[in-house]
Amino acid sequence: MVTDLRLRRLPTAALTSAEVDAIRAILFAAFGDDPEEAFTEDDWDHALGGTHVVADLAGTIVAHASIVPREIHVGGRPLTTGYVEAVAVRPGQQRRGLGTAVMRVVAEVVASSELGALGTGEHGFYERLGWRTWRGPSSVRTEDGERATPDDDGYLMVLATPTSPPLDLEAPISCELRPGDVW
Ligand SMILES: CC(C)(COP(=O)(O)OP(=O)(O)OC[C@H]1O[C@@H](n2cnc3c(N)ncnc32)[C@H](O)[C@@H]1OP(=O)(O)O)[C@@H](O)C(=O)NCCC(=O)NCCS
Image (cartoon, rainbow, N blue to C red; front, side):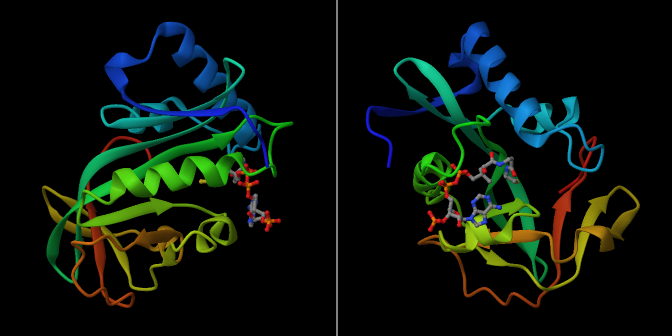
């Protein structure tokens, strides 16, 4: 475990331009060049407007996650949701507990919503922290009604909070439309 780790939570407007540059550099490096996995400008936009969790070691930012407000419907019921975006640890500093430390703060932030949710291919990392894979069909709510998002089925994870209703992981789940990846 790393010592001298500082963990901060702050709104987007409180990030300095140097901090934004450092966080973006970590995200683009950590997600790599594979077009299927690479971090995009839409992904960055999705990470803005909520709460950022920023970890630094001796003044150097090493890890980040953000939580943005979304309205997710489960089984047709709208739930205020803390949706987690842009989780990454600086390459070279991974597997030292930094991602776990950031996600523990994320859980504290998410606790004020009715649900935590995120999309990931790294289920094992989040399962250790209490996140569960949503098994029901996913969709996006558009002006023309709901559109299935089968490519995202099995990709979504949720975290129950103190105000979550009982969660049926097999139920349908939907999100509002946004540019880029909707989930
Ligand atoms: C995934 C990521 C955020 C994890 O952060 P980290 O600091 O490397 O992870 P930690 O050291 O806190 O925890 C690692 C633990 O999770 C477990 N784990 C399971 N799946 C994992 C995965 N895909 N990546 C890393 N650790 C994983 C490890 O076995 C380890 O457990 P252990 O300590 O008992 O051995 C980080 O590796 C990363 O930035 N990866 C690239 C970007 C990415 O995939 N982001 C998240 C996807 S949405």
